[in-house]
Image (cartoon, rainbow, N blue to C red; front, side, top):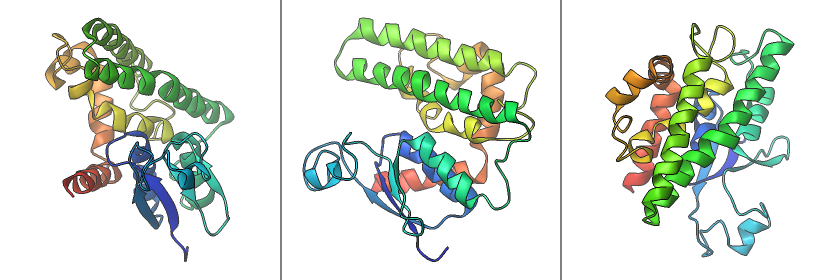
Length: 223
């Protein structure tokens, strides 16, 4: 492709980093503009950005080749795969698997991300009862994924899909999300509690695209 995709992101927020993984997996050229959470000129609530996304959130992409503008990280990843996965890296082999990928993406966006985020929000507000409540929900989420992975290497079929990769950016924050939880605040504790999840997470996290995303995030936050 001759023109890179324009990508609006955030240095810390995990959701846009899901898209970076797919950019890197598929070798899609892109340019990135990092925004903050304010209403200044570089903020998601600035009128100029709200014209692009009235919800005032990132990620957002503009593909100059197709003219398509999209928000919502999982929707963006579907778009990237539909248009640029020429090697069929993420193609599913059956209709059942296609909808299972969507099922897990729905679970990730409706359960994993909100529970993890609320745990951090409660901590920022000093609401320790709220922290304990949402940390229990985080652990329940990990237990659900652990149960789903019993006897399986990946969530869907016999290869890595968008479903597996979508969980990674938030799971990489678990040391912060579960800080203070006596049984699950460390990787060792999580390995003991959720062995299927831990094996899967460790494997997915070693993919070159994920490692590249981690390095890019570290570089972005060092500036």
